[in-house]
Length: 341
Ligand SMILES: *Cc1c(COP(=O)(O)O)cnc(C)c1O
Image (cartoon, rainbow, N blue to C red):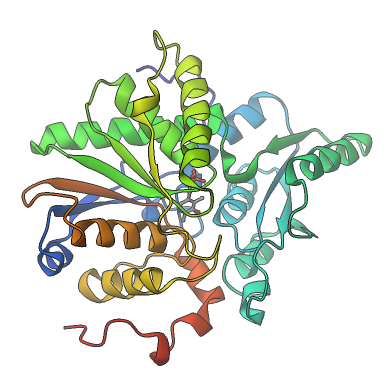
């Protein structure tokens, strides 16, 4: 699959490593668990949005943009990476932050990603929970145009067909690694939200005829809605790549059993997943996405969903900066795992 016709800047230290997790594999006693370290993409504490931004910033520069505008939740990892990517390329950045998580601790509104956003130097505006964030994004674009700027609007999570190309690249890396090391992965599994990660992985892994299925663990939407949204973007990405025919609906699989009470709201499973991966492997997950994603993996293994000897590849999509906004969640009272060794 040739991606050279798409404008791209380099932001990612890639390929990101794929590592075997021996201790968590042994502890869970099921399939072999591998992890792709997209938490180590290398831009201002890393994460999955960096891959998308290679193509989005490339497109923005090709179009002569002076200013990047995007939106996300208060603790958005996407917003943090977008501001950093804009800084690297001399673009101004404005971010609209939806106060999506109610009743959060003070840290939520000052620490974690938000602290990094301030240091990275964007213009930050807040919007109330439930705002039409796409309409808000358009309105800010109009305002900047009227002021003589050339704004480039990036949707929430960088999830459009251009952004999803970043995860087509990740699919190429996964298949290359699998072939190079003689590893057949039975499933790729990761947290899914704004859908670009899963859409790019599905389009890439299917387009490369890898036969590797992808399971998205939803952090927000119900299963049917999430699958519909991922499939729509995966098909748009397929078309952008110029692949023949139509992507089958059966290639998109999501599971929304691990959302808990809602987006960004902690669950016992998330706390356990974060603590287990930290204590068995020295790897930091995040409270909003990868923690819930890995909680799904743990639960499915415990329920006997996989056979021993199968190989799962968890894509660590980053977000550990968000832990600092959830300080009060990781307390001794909430501790789920009391025998770390
Ligand atoms: C955005 C994000 C996701 C979800 O990726 P989408 O492409 O939005 O579905 C997963 N993990 C982390 C840490 C994220 O920031």
